[in-house]
Image 1 (cartoon, rainbow, N blue to C red):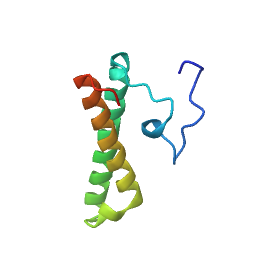
Image 2: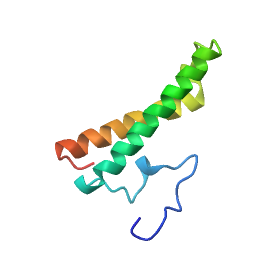
Image 3: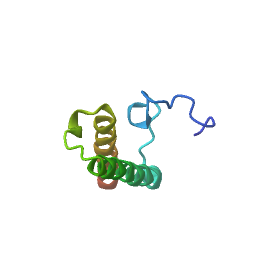
Image 4: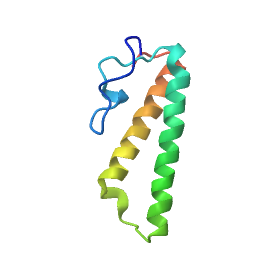
Length: 86
């Protein structure tokens, strides 16, 4: 955000694989917020799948992407909290 809003974020490009990734301790609250929101998104997907009686969702693109981002955000938060650079 140093140079203004992000112009690179879209459906195939996200903060996790950005070359300008900011992972210092002062950014931890932002990563925690993204982690929380990603958890909520994945939970909503699972609720929707269950409501529709869908049990074979693990190969769905939207599920894979959401689960992947959740794991990435978890790893970044853990790294920042432990003082390890990402």
